[in-house]
Length: 348
Image (cartoon, rainbow, N blue to C red; front, side):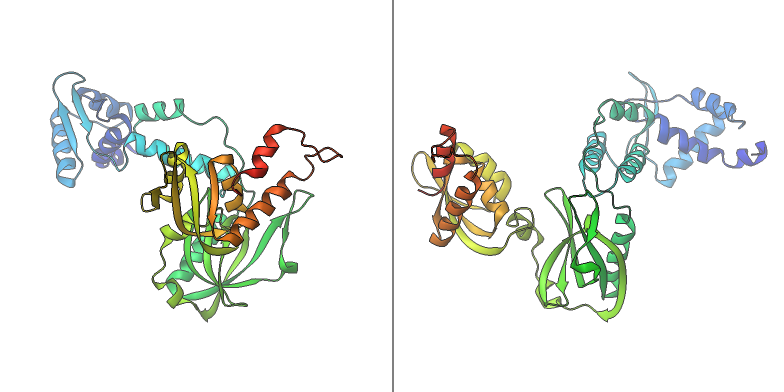
């Protein structure tokens, strides 16, 4: 690039220096700025740099000037603080619903929001293993099409996939397209879901976004506005237990006091929790009862039991017995004393 053209962009290069090389812990002197600009082929004098800094401040950049201890000019304010960027990067790396390539690209973009010194801190704390990732490369395109459907108030159609024993994705419903009125997107239990009305049945359903492919917008307007008008996303996610619940039920549970943290962390501060005696408390609320809910309860062993309704108590007992199948000797005796604990937990 010609030197004269670089000269016209001098103030932008100074902004670049502040963005990339300074933060609250790392300042830079005007002399250093002049030296960097000259290394880029840009003529600069100290006086003009001072004027440019004032112009950048007038533009809205919060540039501080520390005169003692780490003296120098520095960018005071950024869109994200270092801990916030770390939270976002960890969330991206642990998200299963985006591909490994998309994960690396997103992390790189987040790194660009920090200064170079902060970047080195982030890279030192980077997660080593990316973890299990979806192979579906259509995620970004599909999410954009779904949000466009929200804006344009139209239905969508797509093919919905599942894994086979051959470790390949296979289209469900014999490859026929699902027709849905899309209304909400939500992240729950490390999965990303589309919530909408199944146009074939008229029932509200959820769909894993990482299993959706070949999204197409349809001409027909969405149905289900009344259902989703007062939709409480927080309450919905609390009771879903992995989004695979089969039926909503008002359930009363009794827990040992030792597991109060786990219960509170799952149901939140609005959960109805009351002490029942010195060693136990009860929880009452609506949950989607299904395999995931029973599996969650089983993880507490004898520390939980279902008080009501009786039908759910019996279903949980059947769930535990089925889980024990194959763990008994031929004569029916238990192979491990712990199995008896599991057999009796929650069904007293």
